[in-house]
Length: 112
Image: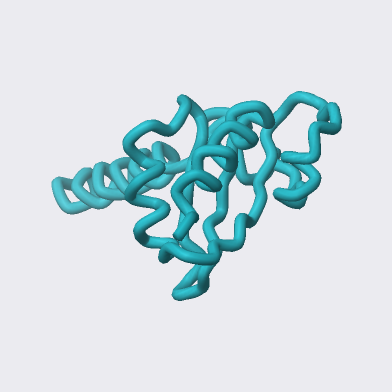
């Protein structure tokens, strides 16, 4: 009887732990909702619909690791920055206007 109760308890704990790892809402996975928009298009001054975007910004003079470190200090709320492997590009994701502002800051960092 005690063995049966232990098995049931462990099964319940495993199920509870597994379920607690599931997203609680669709907003928990912004990358599923973000649409890709080219960085040049974002900074061209065109009007863009609201919502989250993701873009890749190529770097010319600084490394992606340096850019990420510099940007993380002053990122607007909801904006994420990530490296793309060892390449000279940075991924930026978040609300349109905040991503555009982050790209502008990145342009000031990526100079000789």
